[in-house]
Length: 72
Image (tube, rainbow, N blue to C red):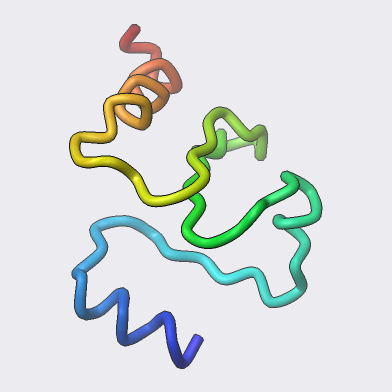
């Protein structure tokens, strides 16, 4: 948390950044490393995953979010 908090403040992340100190999510969804982005449904299902940095524009992320919202 001591490393993540200053970074999140610096980049002004407009989304929730969560920590997993018990390593439960990494084990559940077989996370490979950092950075890794996930789109998780309200009921806890993994809908989309990006291993590595999100590319500029992140078309795949946008499509996954639109699909999850029923805008496809």
